[in-house]
Length: 98
Image (cartoon, rainbow, N blue to C red; front, side, top):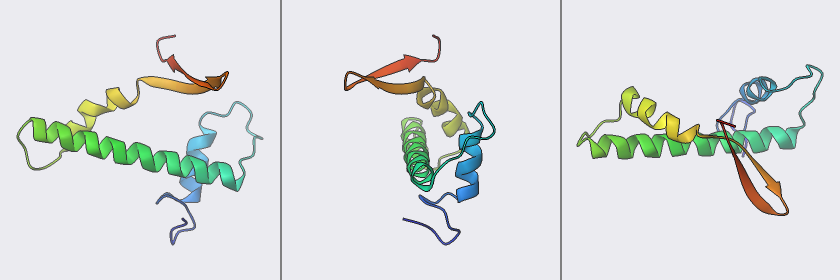
C-alpha cells in the first residue's frame, strides 16, 4: 500500500533506500521495488512493536502518557538480534555478541 509520497508502509521510498544502503558494501548495489516494499513493511512492524512495548512500559510505571524514556528503555529488547536467516527451512537467530 503506497502512501501519498510514493512510499509504502508510511515510509518514503528515499528513506527506505537510504536505510538499506547503510548496510551495503558495494555502492553500486541496486534495490528493486519489491525489496523496498518488503523493507518498508518490516520498518512498519518494527515501529509498531516499539510503540506497543513503550506503551506497556509506561503502563507498568502507572503512567498514562508514553515519553521518549519509555522508548529508550525498550530499544535494547528490539535490537537484541542482528540477523535472522534460514538453514534447512528452520529459522536461526544470530546474536549481536557473536
